[in-house]
Structure formats: structure tokens, C-alpha cells
Length: 599
Image (cartoon, rainbow, N blue to C red; front, side):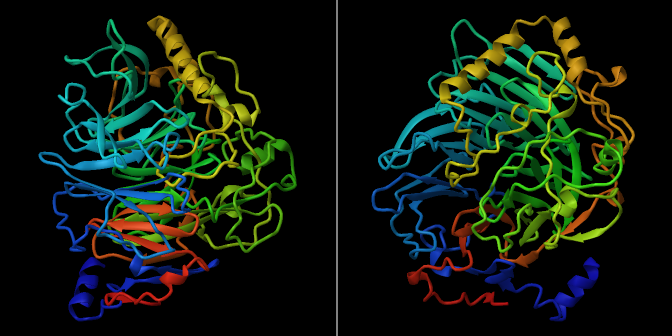
């Protein structure tokens, strides 16, 4: 197939496939590329991306009185830019960056704004670097506040992901290609010697350590997760859970405050590169080197679907909060006993009776009660943008799963979602009490009443204050620190997942043989066909709503905003795609890019 494609391209037959799209249609309408809203380096020259780190983009709103409070930060090679983001309203002015920085000897790899402290006069921006350091800067004041891991005594490897802990002004988490994550406090120093650690919590292929020191210093915690690089992590909408994807191909989901493993999933093959949460925290999507997007249920701790549309590695996945639609509805009707029903929804896990939260329906065209559709997108090294719909026929099947190629634009399912509690007491803090059906205690918060921040970081629950959040983390750490190793092992027996089991049943308790505390390599051949990694024929296969080539170089950014979609490629170009009906007056006069083709 590859040779055929190359031959077609050489003969001119692949011309259509190589055309860059500037417009695409969905059920909501037409999305249009705004060429005047393109952001890049001021000279607009494509960046020679060979050997450089991926271009990343972060957003923040500073509540400017002028009504134009959006700010954008992006890295290209050794350079870091900070602009006023005008989106669909006005053309980008690249001649006047608010701040520009050029680094020597290292490159920016990732960054994240603190949305809690952002004002029109000051913002706190964390920047991770290829040499392992993390810098705290204020691009409005053009100041550098602090440099963490300056001497690289904590970790010498590349920073792969950095994010503020949701709801807290001072704590942030940093992941490295070494497979380690570190929790920092901006007010603490890093010390003049390499840190010494004491074991706090350990499980299969992960461990958490505290820093041993006479005085408080960074890092507060050291997480070692999986094997190989820890490529990305994402906090749940309420900030209580943490999803991590690693080069060993595993998704691991932790209760962040309690330092407990909630569940795991294995890629079909290769490493996992990206991860995101649904707006209500009930589903996680991961992508990576198997060219697939994989949908994992937080409630059921299992893979529920895979999506195939990309022809190369998937680099970014993201949910569209503004097109996703979830409504309250009548309970699902079914025939047969409760046991039959549980068998139908797979693996016999109990679901709580709570209803789904109401998510935004701004762009939804279906007003029927009980309708559920999650929209998410993905971009990859194949330069393609894919949009996917996760609908009720996938989420709540009435019949046992069969090998069915399912188009995700099916809109006629009417079965109502059932809420869920976590089975097996996985998220039970320090106690071994059995889990309950109280979804508020066992699932991430569903509240979406507060505006969603324009960043890769998810919002925190409004019901949890910063002080409560800090106390919860401190309480969890102190409780585990006081346990003896024997106590921790006994506790671990109650909370660790079974790793090898039949597809038809999962126990709430771990097998003694698999309850290992030493780090061991997992044989991919042994996970294939299990709950960790079901066979392809055992799951619905999603097809994308749209799959369009939108760049010449690999894509590295996908962010859904209220009035547009933002993408970026490794050449250093950041594009704005106006949502249907959202094109500003000054943007409607734009010219179509010479390389673009309207479809």
C-alpha cells in the first residue's frame, strides 16, 4: 500500500491527497481556516524542525478591561513568544510580541499558565526545557522569577510535561523523559545537593517517594511511573485524579491526593504519547505509536472503543467541551434480570444511579432529552486532523459487543447514560472500606459551571478551595508516611488491580502472584487479549467524522476554544479555525492561502 501510494504520488495521482485543506464540514456546519489569524515567528519563515522539540501552545485569559484578554504563548526551536491572541476577531500582529526569549544551550519543550493568579498586569508561566530545568517567568512584566533544577541535580533528562496542580497557586508537577515526575512548590528551593528520598508508596511498576531533608525543599514528591519516558499527564476536571501515559505503552490513572493507583490500560503496540479527559471526567482518550485513539472508561476501568483514522503516530488528543452534549434522561430500559443487564454492559461492574451532568450544547443540533455525544479530536505525525464523536451506541451498548465498524456520526441512539461508581475500592484513600455507589465520592467532579480555561490544564472543582486541596494532599502524604512497609503491603493487596484475567470477569482484589512491588517488565504478548489490551475484534472500531490533511509538517497542537479550534505544526505555524458562524467581520475578507484547497 505504501509503495502504491508513493508511485501514485510520483505519477501525479497523489496530488489530491497532498492538498492542504482550509475548510471542512461537520454536522454543526463549516469550519474555516483564518489565514490572517496565523501566528508564527515574526518573519513567517518555516522553521527547520529537524532535531527540535515539538511546538507547543498555551492560552490564558487575563480579564483585560478592553475585552481582549486572551494571551498565547508558543515555542519554536530555541525561541519562546508571548502575544495578544485576537482569535477570530482580528488579524494577528506578529510585529509586536509582548515578550520574546531566545535560549542558549537548551530549548523550551512545554509550558503552562497559572489561571488562578493571572491578571492584566502579571501572569505566571512555567516553562520546561530539554536539559531538565523548569523556569518560572512573568512575560507581561518580562521577569524571571525562579529557575528550578538549575544544576540538574534532581533530573538531567528532558522535561516532557509541566502543569500547575488544579486549584492550587503554588504547586506544580513536572514529568521527564527519565520516567519520573516531581511535585514542586514555587516557594521552596531545590537545595545545593542531590535530594535523598524515602519510600512513601509503591505498587506494580510505580513508586512514590518523599524528599528526606532537615528543611523543606523541592521536590516534595518523586513519582517513578512505568518504563521509559513519561510522555504526558493530565489532571481530571476536579484535579483529584491524574492520568499518565508512558513509552512502555501504559495508561496509568492515579488518585493524586491519596497516591493510589486507580486503573491501567495498555496500547495495542508501541508507546502512548498523549492523553486527555472528557469534560465530566468519565472517559479518558489516549493516542500514540499504534496510530490509534483509545477510549478508556474511568468508571469501569476498561477500554470501550478504539478509533482508526491516522496513518502515523497520534501526537495530541483533546475533547471539545463546546460541542460535547450530555443531558439528564430517563433510566435505561432493558429486558431480563439485573445480572443479564450487567453482563450486557460488560464485565459485571455496578454503575451508580447518579445522572450525567449537563454539558455545553452550544453547537449541538439535536435537542432530544437523553442524548449523549462526546466530541474529541486528534492530530498526528501524518499531518492530519481527525474529529470523532463518541455516542450512546458505544457508551451504553444494549447487546454484547461484536466486531462492528461503527461510524461515530450515528445520532439516533436514545438510551440514557447510567452513572457509575468505581468498583473494587480502588479509590479508597488509605482505608480498605468497600466502594459505594456514591458517584460524587468515586468519580471526578462533573461540575462545569465555571468557565473553562483556555489551556491544556483542566479546571479544578469549584467546591474545593485551595486550602482544602493543599490539606488533602498533605493529609494523604502524612498518612502514607506513617505506615510501616508491612502495612503498605497489606493495604496494597486490597487496592491493586488484577493484571491477568479472563475477558469475561474482573475481580476487585489482586492476585497474590501478581502482587509484586519490584519493577518488572510486562510482556506485551501476555496483555493482548486481556482487559488491559483487548483484541481489535472485541471492541467497536470508531471511524472519524472528518480526517483532513491540514499541514506539510507533523502536527503538534490541538486546542478547542469557544469560537475556534487551534492547531500547530512543527514548522512553527499556529492556525485558527473558526467554528461555524464565528468568523469575525474583519476576518471575512481574508484571502485563501495559495497552498490551500477549499473542499
